[in-house]
Image (cartoon, rainbow, N blue to C red; front, side, top):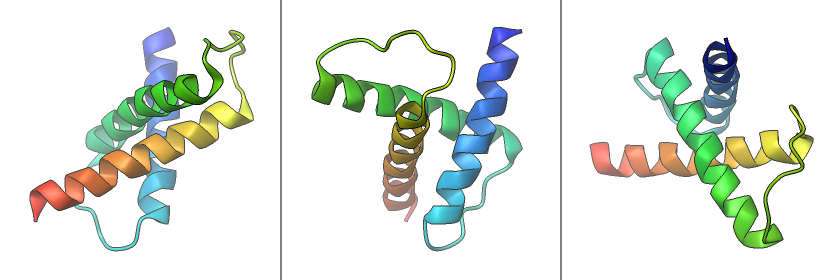
Length: 84
């Protein structure tokens, strides 16, 4: 059940990143969810570089959502550059 919840949040994060990024991205729902989940991992790694530690274990944290979207934007930008 936790993996399903992670994918649902990944779809939301990926959709937000796709709305922010200019241009059109030809992605389906599964790819958008994978983008959001991967963006969460990238955002988590970036935040651990700045904070130097792990999260406090909270289910939702506003900074975690923001860093997830930033991570997804980085991956979406890289995907666009590799595709063209």
